[in-house]
Image (cartoon, rainbow, N blue to C red; front, side, top):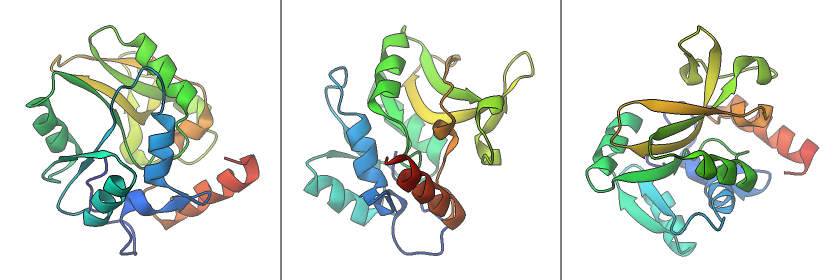
Length: 185
């Protein structure tokens, strides 16, 4: 999912082309999806992300055009063409292959969302990524999902605090780069 406007950034660079650890967010997402269980990768881009579209084509990634109306609206539009699909939001730089493989193996035909308990986040999280489960526990949406037409979504819990890193503004980008350097990611 790489079709947003990145309105919280004071830069003309599209979010997917921002760099964390000297690799673009697009390249990071692509690397994490290079697992045996994933047969094809596409970038869901919009009219607001022409440079991302060009970079994806350069990398040999297919493009799915979305209107860029918003995350949920674009997902709904994709459901008109696909029965189910895996999504990885472009702004979560530390999703790795092991996360993706575990996630795909947990899929049982119902919509699935990766989550991280708030207790595992080790610091700042974006308020828009926070939610509560039925028991009142707080968690963070990771940005890794399998979407189906089934309205009920089950969750798969992770414990890796790096999954709480979500690039929404310059301070998030700076923090992610610090982590990438410190941890060699």
